[in-house]
Length: 156
Ligand SMILES: CC(C)(COP(=O)(O)OP(=O)(O)OC[C@H]1O[C@@H](n2cnc3c(N)ncnc32)[C@H](O)[C@@H]1OP(=O)(O)O)[C@@H](O)C(=O)NCCC(=O)NCCS
Image 1 (cartoon, helix red, strand yellow):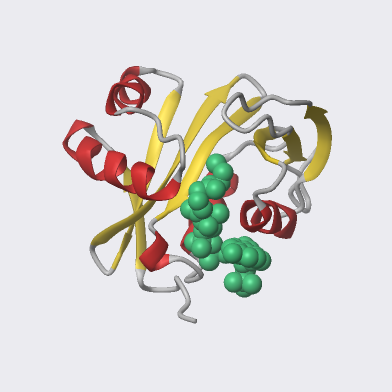
Image 2: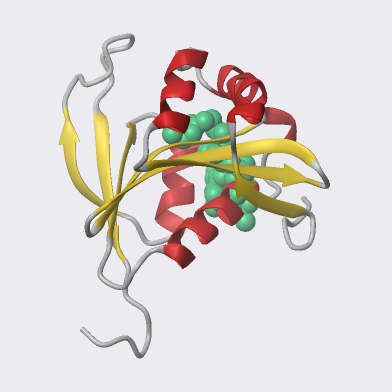
């Protein structure tokens, strides 16, 4: 198992990255978002796509919406060939490092997604609620997870 330290660079994706983000998306999800939906994220002023490059090669991405007091993590994905190298961890580290004290980070995931659940739990995300039968393709429940940013020494 390799570590992301020194091997990963994270930068903001632009329109020139759309097709590679779409490739990572389709390698990562059974019901991937179409390229138009990813393009809409690039055009959405509250949304940002963070692209992770492993030794220069596009390997994963994270999409997050920044709203007042809240960051909604829309999705995170790492290409299968690049998994378990702490690339997702590095993407989340970057997102949390740029969040403000007191911000609430919110996300939802399929109840059966044990890899993502283990990832989020390792960052301290806690269960906020369950949307029963939320995913129309399988009928799975959605788990709603949340984490509040508290930094040592920060004033309330
Ligand atoms: C979930 C996902 C993003 C993780 O990416 P990754 O780069 O392989 O994850 P990392 O290497 O950063 O893992 C960090 C930690 O998460 C946990 N984790 C990640 N994958 C795991 C797995 N398959 N099984 C158990 N724990 C796992 C571990 O605690 C891991 O730390 P460790 O390797 O030191 O044990 C990746 O599996 C993926 O793209 N899945 C498909 C898309 C998806 O389901 N996205 C989430 C919902 S939006």
